[in-house]
Length: 268
Image: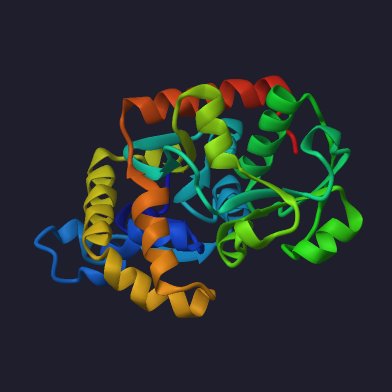
């Protein structure tokens, strides 16, 4: 049986990147919501995607924004309705190569997002016929390309790069996936153990997300400076590149991604 505090106030781990902010904006900034579940609903903390997954695996968190590959690996349940997805170029997952893509032999990866690492493997194998050796490194493009043929940069560090100015071949993996499959790419969902996944929480997460999307301009204005991006880019990113309310097509994309990842091998 779960401890009483987990039932009364589940421990929730959210990703610290900009793309998660709209999902939790209502939890953080809607204290006067008429829905009592939205007021102090959770014990909320923030971490990198891989750390959220580790907290769920260890039991340190009850619910989290979990990378889809970790949701599948840990056999977690997930709430439908909200998540982090794209229907085209995502802007924050960039594969940058100093050699032609079909000749990549080594790939330096920021292992903070295992879903993105697996997505890179799937696309490179399926579309370009290469299976490079992976090297886990901090998100420093110059250092990564000093060691490997290509680098995978994700999240806020990718937003701080301008792909149009880079003297390298660059792939936006959101755009590559959607053009390759004709389906959306879902990167993360609210997931957790079966015994904590109550439907009333799904309603809270959806209301929080909608509150965030209604305040997208405020989010961009407040979050952009600390993340080293312009307010214009932040707003465009969370309103045009990222999709937060998920439908049947998104879940079809999720299922296909998991199937293809399993075929490649889920260990990264």
